[in-house]
Image 1 (cartoon, rainbow, N blue to C red):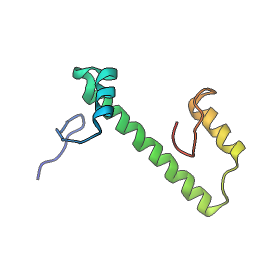
Image 2 (cartoon, rainbow, N blue to C red):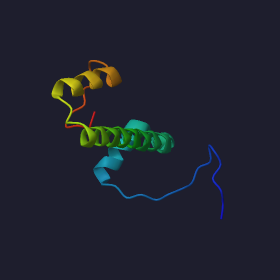
Image 3 (spheres, rainbow, N blue to C red):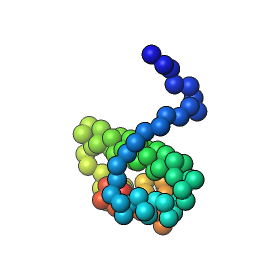
Length: 89
């Protein structure tokens, strides 16, 4: 069994809609696709983690109000990066 070292990478194959792949290539360029996709996945994992924290809080307490959600959004993303639909920036 091999052990991954910090900073090590692995190659994977993924499938995605052609239009989405084209948009990623246009945005990132062929040479930067891995970095672009890695950052997108990292961001998604962070957002999933935040959603889990909120769900745990709400199950133990009560649902967050829209005002609380807007305040947290401003704290996390500034005034221009509001969270919509409880999780997508």
